[in-house]
Image 1 (cartoon, each protein chain N blue to C red):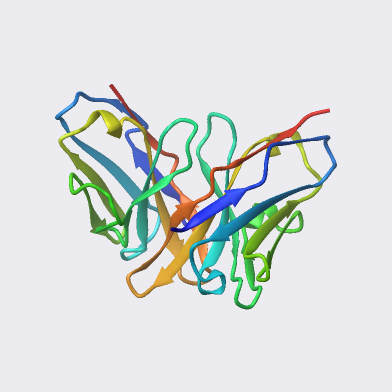
Image 2: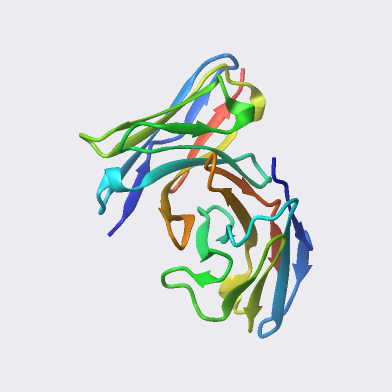
Length: 108
Length: 121
């Protein structure tokens, strides 16, 4: 099974800062990597799919990059609404299995 | 607009079964998959499996094989997830999400609001 790790597990940042979150897969997953944002008490929200494609309605300050085993989510200019937990998630085309990373909490 | 509306909170005893439903609207039900994800209190997201409403095919997480069953009803555009032989570690919030698979990727683009399941004696 493919394992996903994220770093850091949590970070503190200020409004306006650039934040970078890393996600690593235990084996090559090409660009089969998505990012989600979750706020307390809410369902997750899709941010990025296919490693770098912005989800519908997602602000352009969010960007994703990477392929193979190493991926990053960048928030360029942190906004008050961005304090949340971020999860990466890989998908195996066959047998159509998803795996989430452990999450990165972004605090003020 | 796309919406996924889930059933309400439930309290179950260990060893019992729970059924969580997810009523969808705003899109053609059989054209997208439905995935189930759960979250134990204070923990991360755990993928449980998914179902293709077009043909009923399912894929389940290995650790839930034999305890979980996912079904759909195309007449009501509703997906359901049954989990049996409940243990306290099954306590958490259960989410359904629309599963998109395309040439540009596979992802979960719309989510239900979550259904709380508490397993307690």
